[in-house]
Image 1 (cartoon, rainbow, N blue to C red):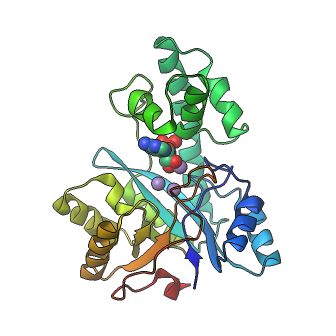
Image 2: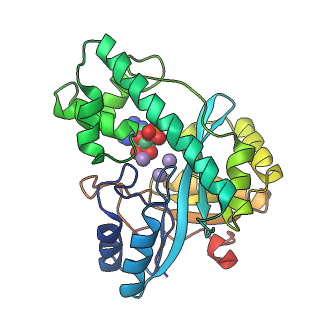
Image 3: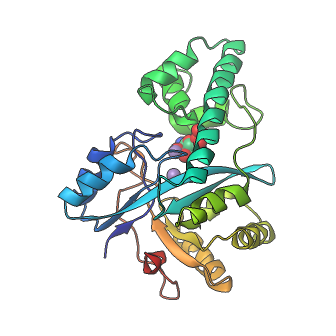
Length: 274
Ligand code: AMP
Ligand code: MN
Ligand code: MN
Ligand code: MN
């Protein structure tokens, strides 16, 4: 079965509108799809309706931004009730932080001689949620770097002119917003954080203590070795395993919507919980 439980739309930093994303997923043969925009659920209704029309199973999703041990970690929520009040309040607090952060990023870039970054980034977000990827697209377009990867390295990460630190949600809060809303919390792309083995295991333990039940084993950003390593961690901690491309943009050829390898045999698929 073709399943993709981690994707983005224009509601956050993806390139396709929710309905366009679903259409592309249908074309790619996806049978179960979750839309997991950063810190927002505004695309779920449109995506669900389109999925229904296309005869595809749709799972409510979100990707929450968390600060854990001074790092940013992403927690995906799946199959929750988007109208649950504490979840909605949590999302609102993250969106408020995004707004202040976007102003601060623009003002820091301005100090570095780059004018008009706020409006520039807004052109790429379509007036919706502002993320660093929108600033990256503006900076590439304005000629400050050759590509998005280069622009992050030069401007948008720790110790660079456009970097703003600050606190996202705590791990405990993010997990409990999801679980209280009836959903399943999933550690997103665990290999991406470049944690040592012991730090990763500490993250997993704290995540489980908070009520988390799953981790992404197959991810568009995991190589084969990382898939196998994460499958071992999931098995050790008796966590369910998820699979998602983290698709953002049809122009990023290295991440394809819905084209994912199978979970290793020892994994317990997270969709058994749905
Ligand atoms: P934000 O949540 O606004 O801080 O932005 C994080 C998002 O930026 C990620 O979800 C990716 O979409 C994108 N991103 C982060 N680092 C990179 C990178 N090195 N190259 C391309 N995109 C990146
Ligand atoms: Mn993103
Ligand atoms: Mn992420
Ligand atoms: Mn993502």
